[in-house]
Length: 234
Image (cartoon, rainbow, N blue to C red; front, side, top):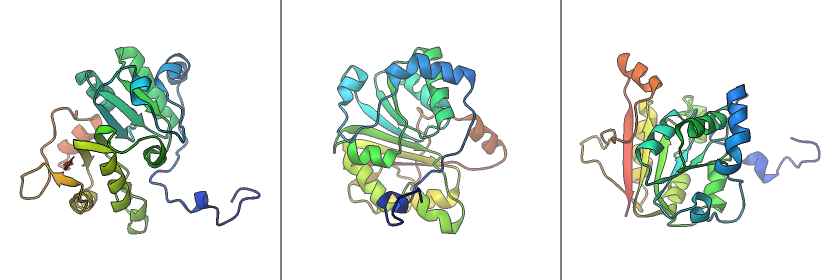
């Protein structure tokens, strides 16, 4: 633990759903931080976020958790300009890459919080404030002993469900079948949510707005599956 910190300090016991990898920020990403950061990066706060003020408009708002390098995020935001996209990512190169895409594509409907999404949910988003949540390809934490680090667990799903408006949706996608099955079970167990899929296995067809990433296309060619789970707030 840090010098002077108690081994029992709560923040040391917190199980995180991510690891902070070190990655190189390119010159283009650094420039995007300087140029676009002031408008599109939101500071983390322990006070509720005024979504309308943050985006400069009232519009349906989608929370995206863990956007990687922002490729799919930028495509979806361009496809759905009438929606606000509030995007959480902890990794600096990914944030820089999305800021660069925002600038290059002239996108105005994205705001980024470079912070742990669980704390954002706890402190910045009030119940009934979201129209949708996207969680695409979260870290599956393959090893059984690490499964507890998975983002999609009962308590976090209850929190997500409470932040959705009635009729709002939670859309998860993963290419790891055991995680897909766990996600389905966890969402089924949440009383505030109901499955939108009518297939026998409970998985949804890929919604049109979710683009195929390069990674996913490569996987499909190799015969790997991708599972979409879409539930709605009752």
